[in-house]
Length: 284
Image 1 (tube, rainbow, N blue to C red):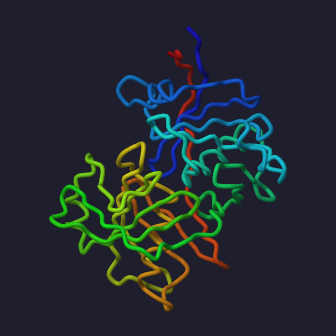
Image 2: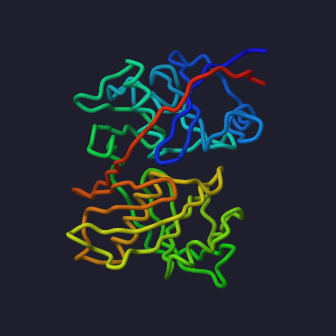
């Protein structure tokens, strides 16, 4: 039976199996990835990051043409492909820089299915430019276990799709049972991550907004943190708050605190990234 070398990493508790495959020789099935990410019978993770050169994966052609040497092939815990992962980009950057595969001194460009993302160092660890974002004008009704009635949510796209729902209190947020997947109406064609947020009181202090959230990730379930979800939640609250809303946000997740800033129509996410251990595992 073949063995697979891996590294385990996380960004504010959003954890990943990192696999180096520079020349694109691995062909992991959805079932194999699900087995690796299984928390009882595998390594355990919210997803898998395959480190592959952009020239060695069909989806990396545009990234390679733009000069991004490395492509982040992100797969959810069930093996399904995802466009992007905000926390994953920071773990990916940490892996590349710690192993000497890349330098971040003048910005590190990595390919994703949502385009090339640029990472730099920040006071929080790493900051990723998630790019332009869109706010959906139409509401989505969200039903979740623990909420007595459906709540309206706003669609936010930051390279992958999100629906953000505002709740009235910490008690309401803590009372959600996210073992069960929230139901969206209308259901997005490719699904969406769902964020439930509670604004701080006061919402803004010293020009910085603050919110708290929990998130249900498609293909995964509830996670301790979701980088793009954090950005989407801040953007949604900023949208609801109107023209006077700040461009800088602090977002508390069950796994830790992340920073979000908006500049020139782009959204940036900052936070830590850790590599926890390395090992080898039998590949089923």
